[in-house]
Image 1 (cartoon, one colour):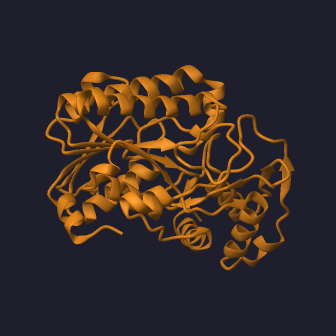
Image 2 (image 1 turned 30 degrees about the vertical axis):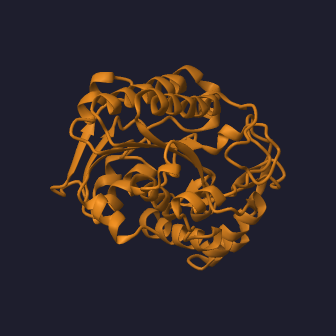
Length: 333
């Protein structure tokens, strides 16, 4: 976890969180405010929600700016007097990118480049950005190691890989310190269960709570390194404050280093939700076709993050799911 010195750095900083009204972004805003930072949130509310900011929107150290990263002037204004950027704004979802690759590219590539330019021109100290495990593409090697990637399998994966290439160029050409965090199937509080592109965990939780049968894509043997939000928050804080020069201008897996298949995941959700509603234990699970663009298995090596950033995952899948299920039950039932 972060040290007292790192906490002091945060408490004395102006930090911009793009996509700050979204799932991960709003959790970052909340955590940074708790640590004493002055936080600016930039979000166009296309996938984020004002309700995610309710707990702290009146905080005098918090500022919300409604704007789109596809507009360079908006990005430049947002970066004024900012020490650090945590760039979370993006259009996620492999299926969304397959349906509409142009918009995914505009947001995830052009918007990302706008933010890099704005950060450079405003002399931001460090640019930490959300990368993606989708960058590993068709690489079959397990566990996934940062310097061994395959061919991208979706427009979304291409955009996130391009982010890494641009960040590297801005580091080498302009001296902007960057760190990329390849997120692996993040879940937890504030994750939206609604919409066509909802992540599997909140979607299944809501279906169980409504006594509906979740549909697993494929036979359920596909596996993922499901990563609880608190692990992701830790990685962002470590990336923001690390003083090890060897750790800068690198990309890190942001995960647990363990994998769970969809059958196991669904059974764990049933078990934990049944503690609140015993009828859920009897709900049948259904199966559908495999989803286009999905990789069969994903498992991260977190050795690099442990060595260079001092990362120590605080939550394995079971601890994270218990906390997430309790949050959903309290907030969405």
